[in-house]
Length: 87
Image (cartoon, rainbow, N blue to C red):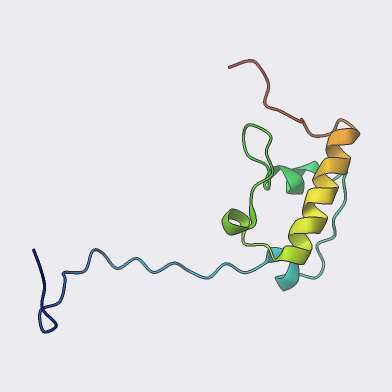
């Protein structure tokens, strides 16, 4: 069905994506520490992958630092590299 300029296509819902704000820029008190696994687990998927920026809302600077900290924590065996095989 073709719509003319005066006829508008019907809208589908009222969804407008909320802009994501970097949690680390907003709260300067949060420091990256490889031993803080509770904070780091929020930025890791169930299968062990690091969540991308578009999902977490972190800025590029803090995403790089976050990835570096997660990799350090994996190396010391505080976080898993992959998901457990208990599926």
